[in-house]
Length: 172
Image 1: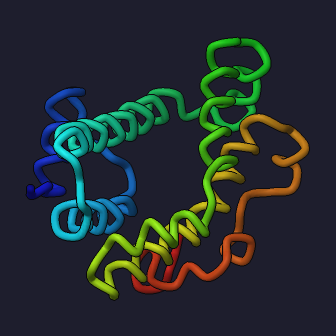
Image 2 (image 1 turned 135 degrees about the horizontal axis):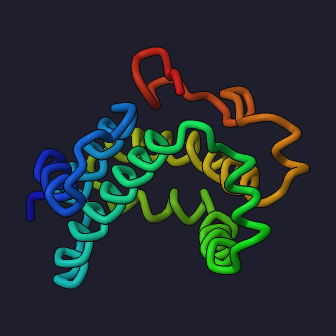
């Protein structure tokens, strides 16, 4: 099975009618994911059928969020916090998202990474997971709790080393 990043991107653009992903910061991670799934993962037939659709869905969500942000430049974290307080569906959505990092474990990710036979690729994937997990969790919590927002955004120091995560300098 071969999953190609450009095919996933094209499918997401076609599905949404949008083509602005905002920053290209996702492309390296997408390439690593597709390479890993194509060469190192031992996917079942169901996984081979489901994962491309999940990737296209995630890319489509990024396109829609980028489009929404462009159409509503005056909105931001205060608006997300208001949605969280006022809209039960959004509160449930964030609560469900909150369960993922709460149930995730770097130890489990490390064990799962052993399925990737390419040592360098495995280390690269683990480094990305370890760098992104705290920031993703912080962003989610910031939209849910004003106290966390007052602490400020997740900085590279908060998230551990980001060298090699995005761009040559590890910029976010």
